[in-house]
Length: 437
Ligand SMILES: [Zn+2]
Ligand SMILES: [Zn+2]
Image (cartoon, rainbow, N blue to C red; front, side):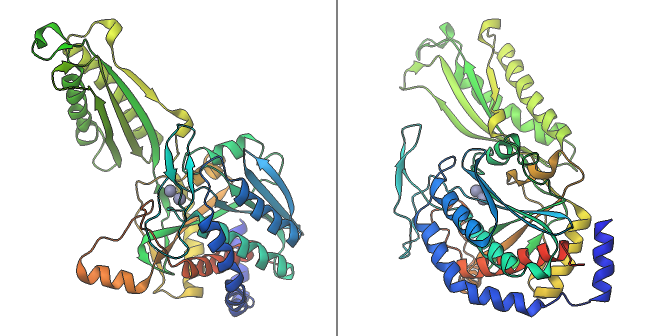
């Protein structure tokens, strides 16, 4: 309904009001925003520890006249600006960095080191680019606050913790994001992208990112001397069979027209050449789009692990233990198709067809999907903003070189291009969704 009204308005006013103004004002903000970016980049914080970052966002929003709540779902912040009748638009930035030691060699590189809760000493880096997300968030907040005369509605801007642990969105929702604060009609976000040139915008209608489950399998055996295997139940051989049999889930049980991944990323067992150990441990990442495929994969993993253990002659009390970490589950992200197409058309009009592209979905995960997952009345869209410096992109293509991905210690986005593009796109979209009058 609202989209129809917006579309009708667009016919009367074919060019968004002061479209050029927004771009020019973003340009004026960029020197200040880049200082903020440099600060975020040099001071990354791990998931659940985003206290400093959240404080910067909260102070900025408060100074602009938002009413701000802190510690929502851990370190999360919610900044609300009510500006007359109209829809509620949520704009989200995630705040956490990763346990990665930066190796870009750039002058502004992170030198932060911490000891994690697990006791591992590590560097910390914004290797997923959430520093660009927070910086653009500040840009959007500034532009929306400076131009309240151009929109009518309620803007809810959130700084979300712990995206990398798949927990932050859930924690904010459980802490009353939609009951203590206005519930959105629209939810918007972007993510920087490490495979596209800087300033390119990518969108995917429908499923865009995958369900992500982390599964642990403890394979039990009966240990003994490596020279007398007949006296043992070898958990390494059993775990190997399980790994191989798991491949048939995707190859033979899921429809070729559905998407699924079962990857065993970790296999640990044993301590010495001539000892058959008591156990082996496997760690899996399991990905899908639909709930049906997800359930089939998780059930199938438990079935195969048990079935192989029975085949190996393990007694009932030594069946494998399969654990799905529900706290780290990231649900798939679904971009509302109508909103996505509408906004893609709008962005194409603003940035030109050369910069706006439809992209295929990926099996990566993002907990942004949670903000609309359980409520079909909320339309949502997360889009990509390319961050690879153009010269680097061209050189890599020419030389057939692979570019560093997100989470790489070498990921060095053209932050200026990402922040300016995202700030302009999100501001223009929020104003479009909350038209004046
Ligand atoms: Zn990430
Ligand atoms: Zn990310």
